[in-house]
Structures are given as structure tokens and as C-alpha cells.
Length: 318
Length: 306
Image (cartoon, rainbow over all chains, first blue to last red; front, side):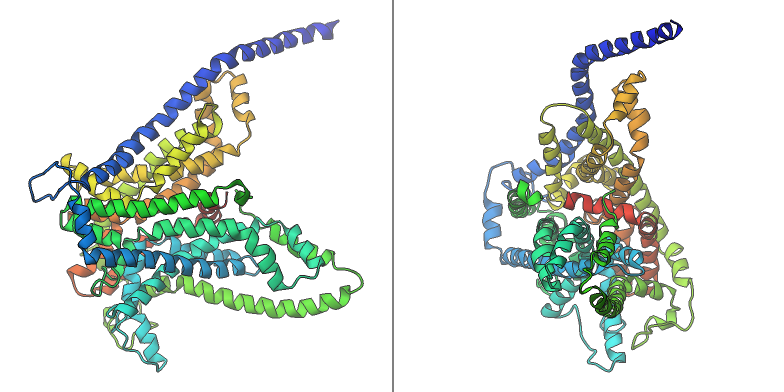
């Protein structure tokens, strides 16, 4: 008897909670939605005001003659775009932008893949190795470029110095000739990013189940077969993500070129972002810069669309 | 979070345990010889690659410690005969790098905190509350991260000029906060999704409402996720160059990357000072890397692998 009476309050409380939660869930649905709304609102307002609104302005200005030193004219005009079309520096910059994006990303991906395959093995000091990999990625890009410019210095730089000590030809003016400057730029770009690619690939490699390799081992697969038949296909989605994300970023490269060559010698390493900066900020031609911004944004969104189309298919997500 | 070394260890263990008895002993012997050679090869190439990743940093450290006389020798002095902290003293004393450092810290810390605040709220709502069009909301927020900053420079420059915000900390704190926000929402959403659903339910039984549950329970358990996101965002803000170059034209308002990049233009090749300033700029980054290595890697790779 005692036991039953003791348990009675519990039962009552339990059913009370049950009925309360039942009642609540109906009211809660809307309260939950309202709470979610207020939590997300500041993010949306801020992103719209600081990112979306300026982007819209860029599009608007690209159709106006807007030079800060001239009186403002609100007339719709295509003059910025026709001027772009006839500007040979713009075409040079556009070509170099694509050239740089494609080749640097390719280099970063290939070197990064090699590094990742290596880091996926067991060896002593692997943690240290990975920490070393983080370094180039964490370094400010512009400082990276300045540091490399220092190493490229023809007189006091590391590279010519080491070449001289080894008794090799050592009078390269690394950043002085168009060809060498482009090669020098690619070396920096690959150094800066390959380790990021490697770390992402490494995460991808480690998500490949061990049982797949076991099965291949039982079937007597060679190392090359394991690589080409298992590793590569299973890493494909990760590789594509890296390729496209890095390309979107490489199309906007600014810091690295500003710090290393400033677009020179001549126009040999001038890309669209740097030319935009020179025209809009240094030349105060907002309209012209905006038109270039629109062209660049179109190129980038083309890649973004490609990204969504090719990568966000469920089957490639695995 | 998602990075573990378990899969690999499994491979190693199972390989030895599943060796078939017929060819077992022979294979194992050959493999161990092979493995030794391969191990040596791998260690060597790991050292080479590790060196490749680090040599510019090493070189900068060496240069920053060189006495003035050994900075301009030909061929270059690889290992200085004596070291000095003179360059550091000049960088912080005569040159305005101390000021740049403070500017960078103020801007990066405040914008990181602002991003984390907004991003955690939104990330929590998307990860754990029920409402319609959730996927769309997340995709739209992520879509913002595809807006190229270079196209924002001109209108933001104009906007800040209009409100006389150029050469104030606001000119960088405001854009940094929102440029990092999409990735922050993404990271927090991914992190909070993995927490057990019962957390809020338990809190509600205890009589807390949604807000209370969020403040008392969710915030506390999501500290590791917030730290990871915070580190990545801090590094991004600390390293940003384009906006800092454009919106801070006054020398005393420059951030460290801009100060270092523009310094050589003012004098001729003061490489010792620049190297010292660079080393100082790398200190927060190096600290973050060494302390939070695993977290950083898992956070960085989250977006690309998931």
C-alpha cells in the first residue's frame, strides 16, 4: 500500500508533463519559428546592407559615367563597357587572370595531392609534418609575397645566393623579365596553397573505408592499381571541390600579385583585380572599375554555377 | 571532430592479421624489408616537403636576427656568425610596426567577436530549430560568400567616405564582420547539428524556454566549435589586405600586412626590419597553429569534405 501511494505523485506528475508538452508543441511551433526568425534576422540584414547592396551599386555604376573628379552623371550609358572592349590592357589582364587561375590551381592541386598521399602514411613526426603544412596557409598572403620578393632579390636574395654558392649561374633578375616573373609568381602561388589542398585531400583520404583497400589486397592489387582504381575515384569529389573553390579564389587574386610584382614588369603579371584597383581606387574612375567588377563577377559566378551543377549532385556527395 | 587517425591504424593492423597462412611467412618477410626501405624513403621525402613548407619562414627568422653588416653580403650569408635583436628593436621603436600591430589586433579581435556572435545565433537557429525553407536560408547565406570582395571595394569605399568612416576602425570591422559571417554560420551549423537532440528537451523539462536553453546549455557545449570557427575567422581577418589597403590610407591606421607590404616603398631595402616585423606578425598565427592544430584542420576541411 505504502509503495503505491508513494508512486502516485510521480504518476500524476508524469502525466502532467506529458499533457503539458502536448499542449506546448502546438504553441511552440510558432514560438520556435519566431525565435529562429529573430536569430537569423541580424545576419540577413547585415549581409544585405554590407554585401548585397554594394554589389547592386557596382552593377548600377558600371552603366554610369562615374569619375570621382568629374561631376556625377546619372545617365544610363554603355561607355564603360565599350571602353573596356577597346582597352588592350583590359584584355591582357583578362587573359592573365584566366591563365593564372587555371595554371596555379592545377599546380596547387597536383603538388597538394602528392603531399596528401605522403602525409596519409604512418611515420614518426607526422603531427609535426602536418603543423608545417598549416604554416604557408596561415601566413598573410601579402606578407608571403613580400618574403618571396625578398628571396628573389637579384643581389641579396636567397635564391641567387644559393645558386652562387653551388657554383651555378646566379645572376637571375627574377622579377625583372616577364617570363621569369610569371614563373616566380607561380612558385609562390603553389607554395602558398598546395598545403591547404593537401590538408583537405588528407581528410578525404582518411574517409575512404579501410575495407576497400583490404578487399583490393586480397585480390592482389598492385600499389598503382589501388591508387588508380580506389584512391582516385573515391577522392574525386574532394578534388573537384578544391579545384573549383581555389579557382574562384585565384580569379580574385590580389594580395599575392600586389606584394610580389605589382603587375609588372610591364603588364606581364597584371590581372583583373589589380587593374580594377588601379583604375577605380587609384584613378578614381568608379564607373570603369565597376564595369570590370561586373565582368569579374560574371566569370566567378560562371564557376560558382559550375560548382553547384557538377558537385552538388547527390551521387557525387557519396 | 571529423579527423581521426583511426582508419589508418586499422589498415595497418588488419593487413598483418589477415595475412593468409599459405604465403604468410614469406610475404611478411619481404614486406618488412620493403617496408623498411619505403619507410626510409617516406621519412626523407617528408623531411624535404616539410622543409619546403617552412624554408621561407626559416629564412625570415634568420634574416631578422642578422646583424646589419651581414644583411647585404654577396653571396648571401646563410648562417649568421652572430645574432642580434636590433632589427626587432628598430621595428617596434623607430618604425611604426607597434602601432600597426595594435591596429591589427583591435580590428581582428572585434570583428571576430562580432562575427561569432551573429554566426552562432544564426547557426543555432538553422541547425536546431524547426522552420520552413531552412535549406534555402542556409544556401542564400552561403551564396553571399561568393560575392567577390574586389567588387565590393569601390561601393564600400564610397559608402565609408560618405559617412567619414575611412581611416577609422569601423571601416574594417564592419566589412570583416560580414565577409566572414557566411562561413561562420556554415561552421556553427555543421557543429551544432552533431550535438544530441535531447539537450534542449532536457532543458525544457527543467523549465527553460528556447532562449534559456540556448544560453545555458547550447552555448556551453558548443565552445569547441566556437573556438574553431573563431580561429579560422581571426586568421582571415588578421591576414586581410585589399580592404585594409584601400580604407586605411592614413599611415597611423594601417594594419600589419599593409604596413609590411608598403614599408619597402618608403625606404630602400630595410630587410632586417621587415623580417622582424614579419616574424612578429606570424606569432599569433604560429601560436594558433601549434595549440589548435587538429581543430584548425578539421574546421578548414569541414566545408570541402562534407
